[in-house]
Amino acid sequence: YKVLTPLKVLLLSIFSVPFYFLASLLAKKIIVLETDLKKQLVAFAYIDSSKIEYIPHGIDTRMKTFTRREARAQLDIDQSTYVIGYFGFIVPYKGPHRLLQLFLDSEKKLNDTNVYFLGGKSAHDQSAEYKSYYNNFYEKASSSKKILLTGFINENDLSSYICSCDVLIFPHTAVISSSGALSMAFTFEKPVLLSNELRGYAQSPDFANALKKSGLTQGDVFLDINDPESFIEHVSLVKKHREKYIYFSKDMKSRRNWESIANHYVHLMNPSL
Image 1 (spheres, rainbow, N blue to C red):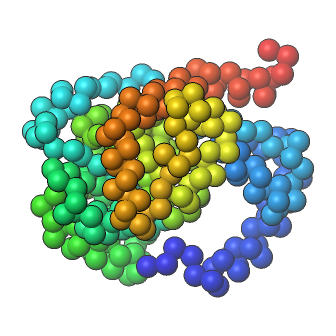
Image 2 (tube, rainbow, N blue to C red; image 1 turned 60 degrees about the vertical axis):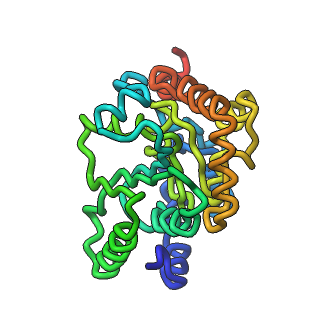
Image 3 (tube, one colour; image 1 turned 180 degrees about the vertical axis):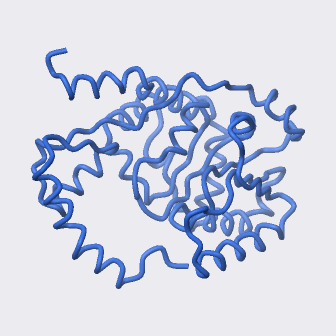
């Protein structure tokens, strides 16, 4: 399953650049949720950088959280099992198939480790190509007893499932937008690992500063999602330096809480306030 075929890339290039440029002429300000997206609009759509404002994805700090032990007791999960979580729809650009293959290739070396895919199939893509992708994913995931496919999770259970994980991995194939799922990981102060394709996130100043303050580097958080050795190495790093990874997520939660983010929007709409 290809997210973008060469023809689709060509057509997007032909039509999207003039669309974004013309739209920018009508806008007084353009808000982006990642600094990397601002750079792309300037470089590829020729938009005046002074028109573009970076305001990060807000984080809801009011959601009910549980300790790892409490969450596992609710879901009847063994306390001694190390759980790697994926949160989001099972869609190609988010890369769940990459994490699945990576785990299957590394399973024998990761004792007492399970992977939980917290999410179900897309409700929007009904194409035969996507159905084949999902069915293949489901069949391969079902081959291991160490893999859990939850399907769609209702809001009441979401906190428990995320809090039960030891680390959340985002194996995306590309930066499409700011990640709401990553924001949820920060909400619950979970350690995170991201694919190298998401390194653009580190260009956002709050992300870069939180990383530095936590004592972590980009190399500690971003990994080659196609390399089993890199995967095993990074899982080991999270286990060894867990407090640093938790500190990073806590700091991101503090920097991106909705109260602070809302002030940015208010100031943008009314600079005199």
